[in-house]
Length: 316
Image (cartoon, rainbow, N blue to C red; front, side):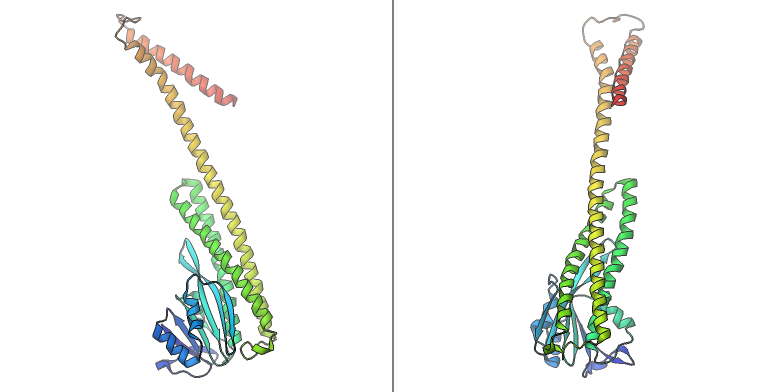
């Protein structure tokens, strides 16, 4: 899908009938081959640049050509309330155009389409930095959600120890691993972008004023903060999973110990009844109350067994 936007009155609006001019934003989401060729023909951007972000395993990186800058960053996406992933987002700057390419709709770009205001025409660098800033903010937003969800699942596991809650915690732990990898790669790209701003050979692609430089530094700080929070939550969740595994193992030991104790206790009357059930002469074989004698003996021996077992447990 291809959507073309331009800025009017400091807000984005979609161009009808694909009428474009200089300074338009070309937004490609799951693009077809024809759409890629169409945008490449209009903007003069290499097709390899446009296809770079269409690999869902693509890592964050930056490439430069004489008239184009390609920056791939990984933005967070929410699969369901228990699983999160990252999505490569390709951002291409040319002297005249701004292009974004992604495999799926994502909340970072959708927020600009719905609420993007305050942008001036031709400020491509500013738009790039705003995308990176909102991506870092979205990581922090999802991390807060993961933290709340982890607390809820922790309470569920304490009450029921159901496997479903453990599986959900495992999905969250996996999500944090994806976040950690993406944020580390994004940080490397941001540092390269910080160094590139001083390169006069690419001033026509990356024009930064003092406010833009401050925003870039804010993006780097937000990315580092998100990375630190992800690593902290990942360590906590990993320790929690180990603790729950130990608790489950301990509960299983308690159950097995109880069953073993009950087996020993029940063995005593069974053994007494087996002796008196033999087809041989036994005491009280002809006695009127012989059955009750056997019952009393079984009860006494069982009581002694129970007392001995519990006495040993109390000593321990």
